[in-house]
Length: 215
Image (tube, rainbow, N blue to C red; front, side, top):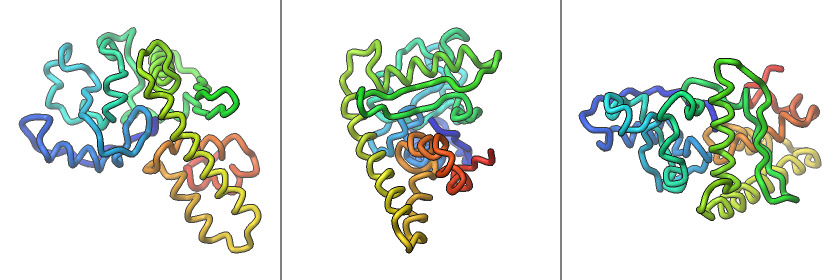
C-alpha cells in the first residue's frame, strides 16, 4: 500500500458516475489501493462500508480504487468499528509502518510492522492481517494470491535485473530512468521495489532520492 494524495474532488450525485470513476483512476494511478496492481478491472470500494456509514456513500474521500479480486477478498467487517479499522492510505504513509518483502524461497510475502504508534497500532495490525489475507491467502478460501505472488515475483525479478545492469553498465543514464519509473508510486507493486532499495545501504545511497527517502 502506498500513500495516495488525492488531487481531484469531482461534483457528483451518485458514486458510480463516470466523473467519479475517472477521478479515482487518476488519483490512484489506476492502482488497487490494497495489492498495488495496476488494473483496469476495478471496483469502487467504500473504505467505510455503505451499510454502516450511509452518510459517506457519496463522499469522494470514502471512495477507493480497488481491483475486483481484493474487493471480494476483503472481509465485510473491515472498518465497521474501531477494532476492525485499517490504515487509510490517503491519510497515512503506510510505508513508514509496514514493510513488504518477497520471500522467493518460501513463496510468500513477508509483511512486517517496522514502527509503532499507540494511536495507530490497532489499525497497523489489522492492515497487516488484511495484507496477509490478500498476498498469502491467510484465512481466505480464494487462491488468487498464488497468481498475485507469481506476478510480483516476475516484477521484482525484472527490477533486480535492472539494478544488476546498472552496476555493470558504463552508460547508466537510460537504466536510471527505468529504475526511477519502477520506484515511482505509480508503478505496479512499487512498495516491494522500494524496500529492495531501502534494505541495501549502497543502493539506498544511490537511489533514495527517487523514493523520497531522506534518511
